[in-house]
Length: 502
Ligand SMILES: Cc1cc2nc3c(=O)[nH]c(=O)nc-3n(C[C@H](O)[C@H](O)[C@H](O)COP(=O)(O)OP(=O)(O)OC[C@H]3O[C@@H](n4cnc5c(N)ncnc54)[C@H](O)[C@@H]3O)c2cc1C
Image (cartoon, rainbow, N blue to C red; front, side, top):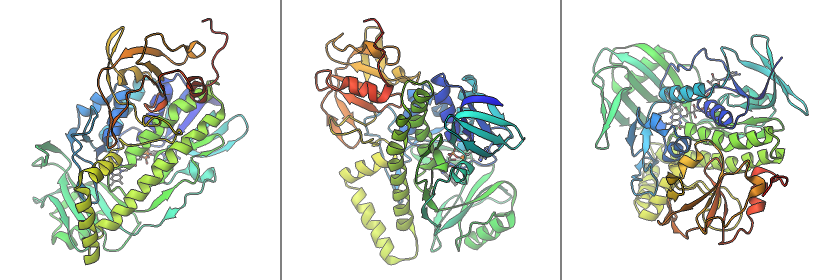
């Protein structure tokens, strides 16, 4: 039986990100993926939000995505678009880039990190005991892992086999989504009507001056809201009938590349961990695609989990560190569920009172303070893990400050490229001593003369030192002294090595 420290089930965007994080941390992780290659028959998710771009920047790979996508203002709420160009981030925008390209680029990175893949095989079951998990594959082979991570999508076998409840709400609306060729020139753009929102657009497009400019030929991406909620697998005929019922013609559609259906089913795993089994991405949460948050949330789940799992596998931290994954990410997922449900309700057509409510919400969101709050939420830039009382930076994302160090100018995010934590001492050089942790936590003395500003919160007092976790969230803020630093180092990075010579 082949052994790995971690087996990841599913090599979609979540599984790939987790595989990369574990490989960077030097953990033997393998991915089991049913698909023969990374090829996705359809385009699926439409892009990345600002915080996901930052997270990729923290690993030095954001440029790969930016080079292929279309930078645009993509954050919005219930039809209200937000311009976040005034937000204090190096990436005050989103990125239009189809999921098939996002996965291809992520897979290229993971391949460079030499992560082993078991392709064209599905996990069919597993049994966990006190020291590990036996994992059965569809080809009859078995793997043994210390931890098994279900990144296997909304219908997750891992979640079901682990007996984790998936409470939530059944769908109230559904839509057909497809990519097809059309013999005639279709009416491109969004078309709302009494049934719901529909849209036709070419898969290939550019954003010029904030406007989508579609290619003049190539496959068309179709979205048609169903008249009645459905969850069945659609055919070309279903699609043709649905398009005809809205547009009066199917524009001579043929040669479908991909036909699917999505709903607003809203569910979340009751627990993200069941002993040695953990869930991330769609396996842990499903919801309407409104607001484009699913892939982004999954990638950020992976970045929260990766370094914690690495520390536990390496024996540096106790297993209880893994519970902070649920404690931190479950509320983030729950908030995404809540905001998608609110948006689905607000954009439901055909009721004058709802129209009035939507206009009222739009009106409120045109005021600067609510706009900033909601834009920070939809772009993921406001995520705040509850790490206790203290400085406003505690539990929030570390900004990508331009520092001056003894090695020259450095961006904070560049210090995170290897997925290690960093203790930034911005006060008196040499003022902090963390000798027992130097094997795990680099200490960088740096100067920063600018202001500390957070999206939506605004300016915060400049800390004298911060401990930044590998996922880019601040775990400790100095009050001008080293008080609490040892506790924070122990809590997040395990007991210090008291044998280390000082
Ligand atoms: C129409 C639509 C539009 C969307 N738009 C956006 C958007 O704009 N922005 C956004 O952030 N999100 C969007 N989403 C959501 C996004 O597509 C998902 O959230 C994302 O794909 C989740 O990634 P994942 O890796 O968690 O799961 P998946 O992408 O479902 O990947 C799971 C992987 O596991 C594999 N697998 C499953 N079971 C097994 C098994 N037993 N053994 C081995 N392998 C297995 C599958 O083959 C698959 O590769 C959209 C979704 C839809 C449907």
